[in-house]
Length: 117
Image (cartoon, rainbow, N blue to C red):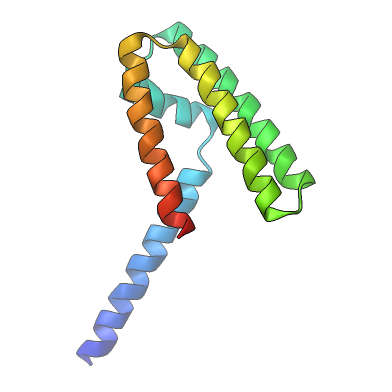
């Protein structure tokens, strides 16, 4: 009986973590910008510009996902798009904000590598 209880709890944990990942992936441009605002202390002008960059990235990412069938080619195109968006965002940041953003990017890359393996 205990074995089934542990199995049930394990299934609930997996389902919960899957739902959290799916929600994070479906964050709107505004929600992602809010995370950046909170993490980097963006001012209103920066926030407005970041939302615009992230909206543009979202529409381009969807177009890439719809048009490129090869998984490796799609991943390369997405990585290039993300790098360009990062560059646009970094232009808007102060030196202190850039340092924090670099740390955030490294953490994002580490999570991506961990999911890929």
